[in-house]
Each structure stands twice: as structure tokens, then as C-alpha cells.
Image 1: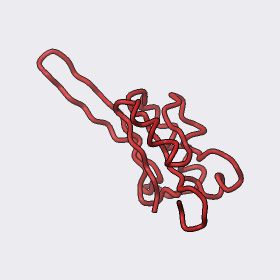
Image 2: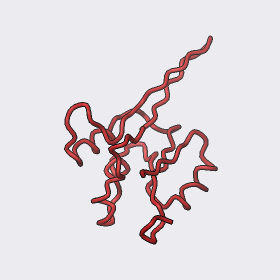
Image 3: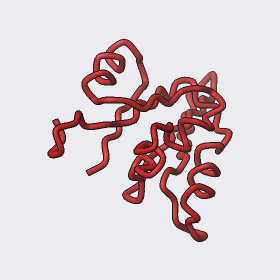
Image 4: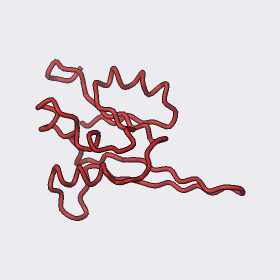
Length: 114
């Protein structure tokens, strides 16, 4: 439980389905008005090459600036990155609900801000 008596909120990212569209980055930057070089969420790519194939994975990575859109979520809205994720691979919710979901989703991560 968070210090205010409510459950701690977080973000589940099922990066197996991230297409690398950058919609989360754009939505976050527009929502918060971050200047060039500042990001609330960044898309990292991971390219792996074996003898017979190349695999590119994309991982939306929340930064220290991410507060899960506290203003939006206080008004009952989803964080901007979740709302605009075109692949639908982000879920916002209570950590106690997200962690069991993560167990059934290979290649996923949970983010919880301080």
C-alpha cells in the first residue's frame, strides 16, 4: 500500500508486442511539454543477430521524469503513453493486479515510480 492508504500504481509493459512506433514518447512529450532531450518515456531498441536471423525488440523505458501522468490519473484518465500505445502493450493499474498478469506474459516488465 502507498503511504496515502491507496494501492501503489504501476505500468505493465508487454514489450513482446511493441512495434517501435514511438507513440508513447510523442504522447508523453506533448502531455508534459518536455524540452528537447528530456523524456518521460523513451523507446530503446535491442538488436540481436545470430547466424541465421536478426531480431529487433523495442522496449518502452520510463525515465526518472515519469510520474505515470499523475494529473491525468488523478482525474481518472490513463497515462498518455498507455492511451496512445498503438500496439496496446501497456497496462496501467494497481501493482497487486499487474504483477500476476506479468507472470503470464513472457517478455514483460513492471514499472513503479518512486
